[in-house]
Length: 249
Image 1 (cartoon, rainbow, N blue to C red):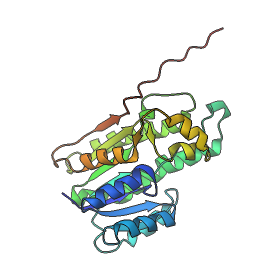
Image 2 (cartoon, helix red, strand yellow; image 1 turned 135 degrees about the vertical axis):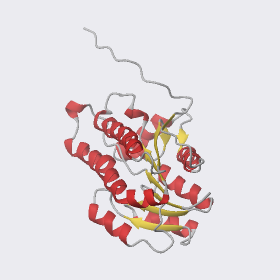
Image 3 (cartoon, one colour; image 1 turned 120 degrees about the vertical axis):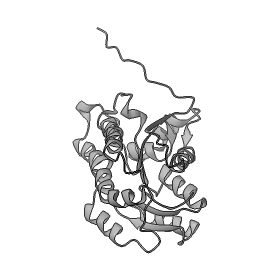
Image 4 (spheres, rainbow, N blue to C red; image 1 turned 45 degrees about the horizontal axis):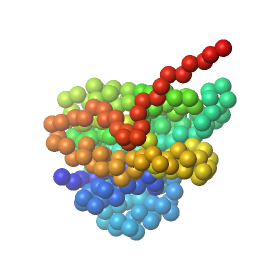
């Protein structure tokens, strides 16, 4: 099985690994992201016949429309959408958080995701395709400092389930993919480039990798068309559920 897949946030981590996995299996990949040079490197690595670079910021609705309207022949009939682009910013508690960071997470993780999904629904319905939304275990298990980020990922999970209900009878499959700890640029972005913080978080933990998640995405996308994985939560063995907090006098 192969087809055309659009992967957002393909410049690093899970998105880049997914682009490589699907292109390697013969899929045509539309790779999106903000960093043109990284998309160009992906095209150079995998070939222009396999990968089309579509640079845009998920918060820029006009840029999304322009990218979709100018897709080259061979990349227009999209079978699978992977909504991977997203970010966490800051680790402060809600009462100390930067409101601008909250808004950026909401604009990227929620508004951009629903905008792109809405634009592509007619094509995906026509192709009886699939939508794979990257949520997080943070959608289910709250933790100190997770606040707005966890809220955005809970939205992604619930939006996925709502899409599944609305698309009943169309043949379109929808899955919420909910990873735990995976070593990517996630923590570097969250901490403003603090490599020591990233090393401390992942060190000795045997975390998942972008490639691990990409393999999971490939498996879900290539399931027989009569099967739907509604939600899939995955963690490294070293990670489990957070405990309760208790404040004492």
